[in-house]
Image (tube, rainbow, N blue to C red; front, side, top):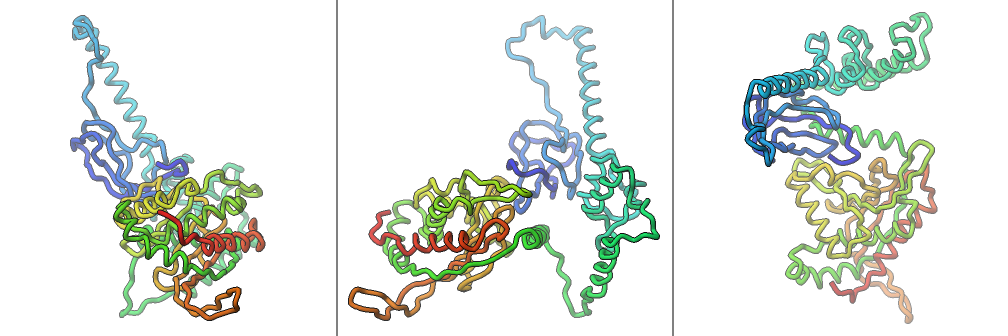
Length: 436
C-alpha cells in the first residue's frame, strides 16, 4: 500500500475458508481510492478464517485473514531436538493453545461487533468507526442520521463520538432550544426532499459505480476546499508539431515507444515548476507544505469512461525518452486496469488533456491536496500573424490554449499567470533542431 493510503475496501474474496493457497497467489481484491488491486499471499498454506467480508473497510495494518501453514524444522537441528517425547508434546500443546488464543483475539478485535441485528442499514465505514470507538448496537441505533432516508453518515458518527467524549450526546440536547445549525440542517433536508428527482416509468435508473461515487465526492470536496481561479494563454506549437512528425517514426524504431505530445508538454511543465516552486505546494490548515519532489499527475482514461491520475515521479529528473516511456507505460496500464495503489499516490501537480475530444480549453477542478492543474487544449491549424524583420505576414500555424486552474487561497494571479506563461515560453522556444 502507498504511504498515504490509510484504508481499503474489500471488494471480493478470491479464496474461501478451507482453500489451499500457494505463495504469491491472489487471495482477495481490494479497492483504494480509485485503484483495484489483488492482495497475494506471502505464504503457502490453507485459509482457515476470514475476519472481514466483502464491502468491509479495513485499516492498514489490521489482520484480515488467518492462514494455516505447515511448521518447519529449524536448520541444523540435532537428533535430540527431534525427539518427540512427552515434554515436547506438552510444549507443542501449549504453543497450539497460544495460537488458538491469538486467533480468537484477532477475531474478537476485527469482528466482535458486526451489527448484524441492526434495525437499519449502516455503511461499512460507519460500522468500522463504531467498532473502533467501542459503540454498542444500542448506542448506534440511537444516533440520529442526516443522510438519505435517515441513514447515519460518517459525519454523524464522528459528531456522536465527539459529543460522547465531552460527556454529552446528541440526544441529550434540549428540544426546546433548537440550534441554528439544526434549523439550517432541517431546512436543507426539506429543500433536498422537495427537489428530489422523481423518475417516470420510461426513465432508466443507473446506479453509480464505486469509482464514480468516489470521483464525485472528490470533485465536490475540491470545489468546496479551494478558491478556484483560471488563467488562459494561447501557445504556438508549430515547431513541436513539425519536430514530432519528423522524428516519431525513428523514435519508435529506436526506442520501441510511440512519441506523443504528452512527454514534451510534461517536460515543459517540470521546467516551469523548477522556476516557480511555490506552485508545487499543498495546504495544511494555516501552513504551506513546499514539496521537494516534482511528481506530475497525468489524467488518463479508463475503459469504463472514468478518469484516473497516475503519477510520474521526479519528472524533472527524466529526459524526453524517459518521460515518453513513463507516459506510455502508465497510460497502457490504466487502460488495462493494471495500475497499483502507488501509481496514483504522491502527485504534486496535475496535467490533463482536454483536447483529446476536440475541446480548445477547459476549467479543470484541482486534484486535492494539490493547488493547481493545467489543461491542454486541442492543437488547431489557424491563420496567424507572423512577425519578421521585413514586416508582418499572415501564415498557417499550429496553436493551442493552456488553461491553468489554481487555488487562490495560496496562489495569487501573478504567480498563476507567470507560471502558465513560462510553460508557454518553453513550448514556443522548443528547439526544432533537437536530436532525440
